[in-house]
Image 1 (cartoon, helix red, strand yellow):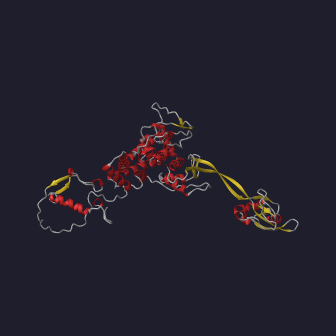
Image 2 (spheres, rainbow, N blue to C red; image 1 turned 90 degrees about the vertical axis):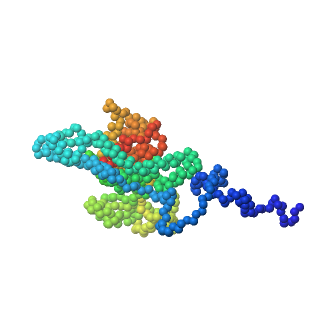
Image 3 (spheres, rainbow, N blue to C red; image 1 turned 180 degrees about the horizontal axis):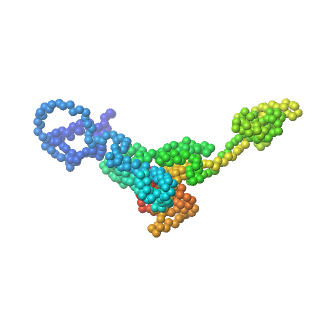
Length: 584
C-alpha cells in the first residue's frame, strides 16, 4: 500500500506545458523546427469554423526561407483615413429607387400627355359637336366632312375613337374603339413599368433562387453564402420585396395620374370601428382622385339616375356593393301625441293638471318651425308618463316601485328618470306619486343609401379595393362602358357570336359567367342588367395593385394557376386595367 497523502505514478497529473516543451525539444533536435516556413496550401475563410482543424502532411508546403536583408529607410507619408476593405460591404441601407434615366423620363412625359388626351376626349368631342350644331343653325346645312375633319384636328380628337356612323356629320364616340385604344396605351405603360421595376423584379427573383437553394439542402460554404446574401436582401427590403414592388408600382401610376382622396361615407346609424375608415381610405388611395371626387358628389348623375351616399360596414359573410338599399333604423323616443283642442293651450294645460299621466309640452320647448302651424291649427303636444303610487308594482315583472311609506324602492339604473310629483286630483285633494316619461321604439326607414361591406377586422384588404371599384363604376358610368367593350371583345367568337353563359360554380347556378380564358372565371360575370357593373376592373385592380391571383405573372411567385390554367399571365387584361385607371 502507498503511504497516506501520496498517489501512485499512474494517477499523477503531468504538466501540459512540460509535455509540449518536450515535444518541441524533440523536433528541434531533429532539425525540422524553426528552420523551415510552413504555408497552408488553401485560403482560409475566417467565418468558416471548419478551417480550425489539425494540419495534415498534404496541407503543408515546405518553402525555403528567404535571406534576411536590412530594408532601406522609407519616408513616412500620412496615408489619410484608412478605406474599408474592398471585400467587406458597407451596411445595407433600405432600398430607394435609382435616379430615372432621361429616356424613361421622356417616356413618362409622353404617357402623361397621352393619358390627358384620352381622358379629355369626351370634352373635345363635345366641343366639336357644339361647333357642328352651331354651323347647322347658322347655315341650315350639315357641315361637310372636310369641315368636321378640320374641327377634329383643331381640337385634337383622335379619329380612332370615333364611330363610322355620324348622324348629321356629328362625331360620335365608339366605345369598342376607345377600349382598344386605351388598352394599347396600357401596354405602353406596362412596358414602362417593367423598366422602372426591373431592379425590384431582379431582387425578387434572386430572393427566390437563394431560398430555393437553401430549401433544396445546400450545405457548407454554399449554404453560408446563400444565407448571408438572403439576409442582406431582407435587410434592404424590411417590408418585403413583394410589398415594396406593388407599393412602388402604385407610386409610379400616381406620377401619370393623381391618385387617392378622402372617401366620404356614413355608418348609417350603426356603430362602426375606426379600422373601417382606415381600410376604406387605404383602398381609396389606390384609385384615381377624380373617381373618388365623383363618388363623393352624390345626387343626380344624369339620365334619371341618382348616386346615393354610401354606407360602409364590416361583414363576416360575402362582401358586396349595393347601389340602393333601404336602411332601417330603430330609435327610442319620448312618447308624445298631438291633440286638437277647442280652448287655448294654457286653459287645456290647467285641465290636465289633475291627471299625472299626461302633461302639455310648453311651446318654447318645441322646434320653432312647428310653433306657428300648431297655433294656426289649435294643436298641442301632450307627453305621457308612467305613474306609480305608494305600494305600486311593475305590472310585467311584479317588482315593487314605491314602498308603502311613499319612498322609491328602486335603485341604480332602474331608478333613472323617476321623479316625485305632486298634484291636485279632480276632488280637490292633494296627492303625491312617482312618475317618469314614457318611451316608445320608433323604426325609421331611409331609402336613399348605398351599401359597401368589407371583411371584418381588416385594415388593408384587396376586398375593400374590389368593392370600392364597384362604387366608382356607379359614380363614373364610363368605367362600366369600357369594361363592357373589353368583355365583348374577349368573349366574341371568330364568327361574331358571343360565348354562351354558364354557371360560375355548380352550387352557384344563378351567377352566370362568360369564362373566356380569364385568370378567374368570375372576371367574365354577366349581370344581365346594364353596362354599369362588371368584374373586369374590380378583380383586375386586386391582381394589378395587390398581386392577387399571381399578379398577372409580373413577379414569379411559383403559385399554382387556378382551375387548371397553365399560366397566371394575361397581358391583355393587365393592359386594360392600366389603361382604364389612367384614361377614364
